[in-house]
Length: 267
Image (cartoon, rainbow, N blue to C red; front, side, top):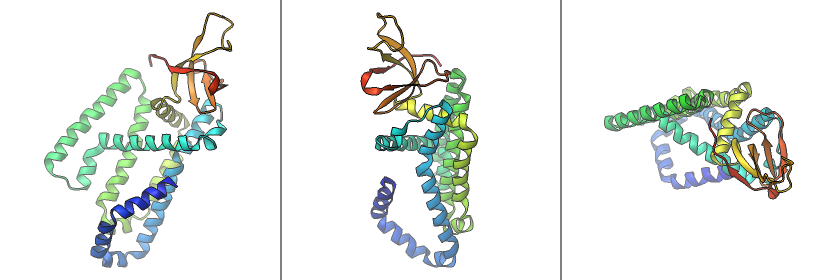
């Protein structure tokens, strides 16, 4: 629903530009009408795939961690949509950070802008390589780079191909849709790590936390009021916890009965 509303708003805002574009290219569009219809259909499939991708990632994450949070797809569906939107925007920003120069080439930007963004891209990539080296999270950083590369490739195609290019390669959106659907399924460990990183950014999972235990569930020691646990996921209704990140069993607690705060830790 939100995606449809956003598309309609963009169409209204750029109505004049869209009309002018159609006026200038109507003959070319008429000659390639069949292929363009296929392209629009393929783009619709890609949009639908992107819309369900956060749910697919979350399902794979829950399967990998060995639990299932029913409330995500019911009572917390709106909050999950906000989280998914934040993740999508972050990946767009990362795409420009890693490969912004390619986008400028597609729009034929001036040389100075291209040089400046290329230098920024180099610094950005160097920073993430250092982060991967220091934290040993090569799989996570590699996955982020690959996803942003896919986004950049499609943006480059969309910006540079023109009407004739889109008509000729109308199946490009289908190829991207197939890749972003199959790869998470074939690489569940990487998918789970990417999902955990996204949850950690929003402080709702994938991180070490301190949990108050007013009823002494974790320890018989009456003097111990707080324990450190690995927060797998936090929803409005429940806390999904493990003793450590590598533990297999997940404990489910009522969220309203406990206080959770981030805990400092080393990777």
